[in-house]
Length: 377
Image (cartoon, rainbow, N blue to C red):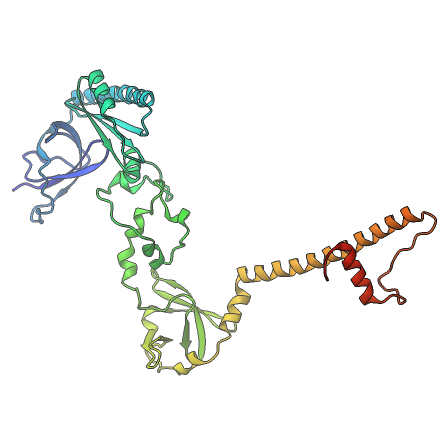
């Protein structure tokens, strides 16, 4: 019995499996195959060893592996590439002439030139029947207009991801798996949409790669910010490293420590049903968990050591300082206006009202100034 090979066809990389081939190519080799649509160019990705389950690898789309690509075939492929560029330009002009709300992405000829495929993207449904007639009359070949989504657009055109490598969908992803923000949350990642999105604008596919590993620890350890008992002291969880399998904590006196996951213990409280967490080594005894019921000052310590909290306090101090400066500036402006008014009324005698004069009633003075400015103090 032969083996099964994985073949990637067309510009939109779709992987098909072909079992029991008479010709067994090597991974990375280009071959000509016969499919339900005609003869096409394919690239061998991998082979399934004998004895493995081939039920999931059954694919009726590929009928036969004809031969490996030779020099004559490569010349034909280069010629088709030039024709695809011209076809793409011509189709784009026709789309603009008809003012269709669609974006043309790429054109592709099958190897036997029996079909010309145009990949496009559109936000709404497009009536391209007239366009199809025009393109069929121009190219004298069977035309296929295939609409794809934003993920398939990235898969078709390729690109460099945030990791610096070619995007996964262009390299090896055959079927997109559901991805949610819960996967990022369970992995203690930042929920910033900019950092979690790929170049397609959707959530990164790689969020699902290690999710199964992180999901194994879900609910087995305290959340960040939870209180935990260590000996006769109480601490707060500051970080959890699932790769190193360590729990990081901070104490009231700003000491920091870390413990392996095997030291973490938990028990539900009888009355409230909440989880009571503590650290217990191999030779240690269970500590007094009543410490968790006592009022904690860990929040105050956390607020003092939190840069954002200190920044807020600093902003508040600056606001109070600016408020005092503004009040002094307004009093200075008030004095200057009184001087100007007095000089206009009597240039020879100028009286400047002073705040510390003892012959005026401070209450009446403030009342008069409030009436003059139109505000109530």
